[in-house]
Length: 180
Image (cartoon, rainbow, N blue to C red; front, side):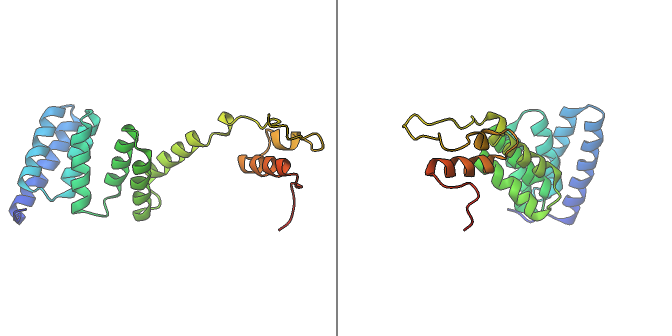
């Protein structure tokens, strides 16, 4: 990549500021043109790349947004918002594992990154929603639970972990509160 002069960076910064004003006035296409020009003048200014990526994301240009956010993080490895948005894009694409990696990267940089926290909480709530986990029942393989109180493992007041421990212990014929 060609060295960018201070004058080019200043010019890109002016274009970035003007693009923000245009965006706020609803002139989205004009704003994007200015951001693209700013990136052309100074392709290593992470803030401009991030803003252009955000505009692309807003307009549904997912691949363009992803490219901008990735370039922004290459130029500023501490740009938390870009990592969070990359995670959001991978979530939209259905690649939850990669999304989690980027959200966690954002939290490594800034443990208070609300966007990453919210997305990780939402993902984990959807993935481990206790309302979607069937209650334990007597298995069909003739293992009897007749000498155990099955209400211990089906109570709605128990956490998923308690249900699992209680259910496994019951199936194995162990007492629920066995000390190790």
